[in-house]
Image (cartoon, rainbow, N blue to C red; front, side):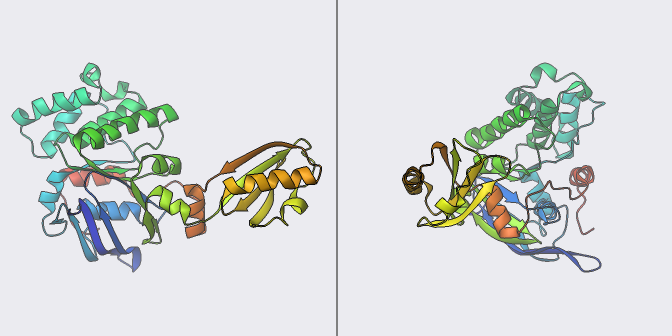
Length: 336
């Protein structure tokens, strides 16, 4: 099975010697949701810009459905859709008019676009609002309009760059239901960046962690979390002032013990939390300590990210996405 998206030693160096992306190699399977995670300045948006023909790579290769993004950019653009972090909708136009513009920029004639626009409006629950100005839309409706504009030409691959930034939890949940539908019922491959790690954990089939322009790790969320090889057990006692550390530190299999600041609990890191819980209960009982609760927790993607990069995950703020959208629509290609 050939890749939907692939790169080999892909890189981008800007004038002045600033290396934004260095030797990125990845493989995205058809029909999967693939996450691309990294902190500010890691090179995520630069990588997406090369994959979508908005930037010319300095070295290496990238292809979409087997088509080289540098040699045949126009053909690549016909196969992909884009939804950016910041809204690119013209709020002085109606939803339908926005889609007419998007269809025209993607080469559809008015005759071709009319039935397609009706279809995507229906699919994204925007039919009733189609002839209202986009300025009257809620944040969630604008995001759905952005998806509609991104898929109006029926692409097989959709790139999403921080698509839920600024949406409330309900809006994010609704947005991802439409994305799941695109993948599950229409076979669209999804390539996304997000700064909500719980979102990536819940949605992505696989993901890559990028830092300083290099891929540090790739795998399923579960596999990446397992690389930490440690769980956590959080113990609370009936007496929050009681220091459990002397009791817990000497137990077999303990990797680390720390008091949770301001929480009255003690956190113990172990290899397998489930088998350690009875050990904790027996030790506290022997020491005459009454336990109020014991909870187990698997590693999170936040902890994986911190262990690999040495820093916490932060909101991405690369690039001018409105300019990228204009470049994509106008067919401009080349280095910046």
